[in-house]
Image (cartoon, rainbow, N blue to C red; front, side, top):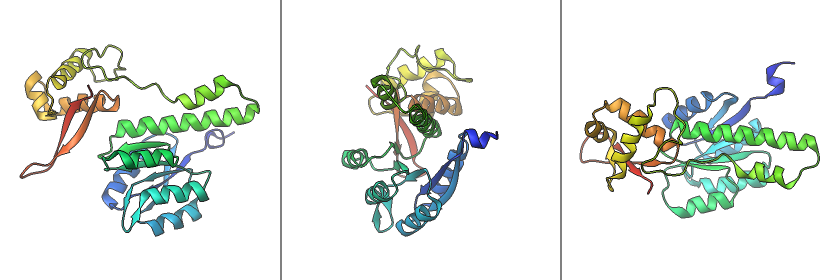
Length: 241
């Protein structure tokens, strides 16, 4: 039996009005094993057309669309395409859109600028969720423990301001350096850029950014864009205290 018959690819539709961001998201998605992008829509009309033609299993949906509200499109998908799931990806920082997305059945809600590790985490969670659904469907009869395991989702790392001993350390991440980065971020309320962190602990800017993005992926710090008077916006990192 071919691998595709055992673990079929999860087909993804990206709904994003910025074509450059849509292409970045496509490349991100296709770096995750088991997922392929089957379409990109830049407005509501294209999205509805591709939903009908492609019938994707998963949609990455932006809230802000030209002359449309992504939350309305989310409701449309939940009403007309019950086998299609939605992950919201948006720059919105207000709580109400998040509340509405959750109420309307979004599988997850990711903030822009998109972090690859965070997207990968939720895609792998989604794939595991679907595998568990298939297993339970085959079993026919389920118990409370099955339901609990299905709804619990992946274990999230708690925000730890200093002690990072329990954080998984991938290749290229040193525990001592990681703790220095966490301690440095934890002492500044207004946040720091990767360059500022690098100067404080004596590492390169690229190394600093790698460690900071690792911490963002685990929810220990969060990042926002800071728009200066001149030049490109910078990511500012803050500890989740």
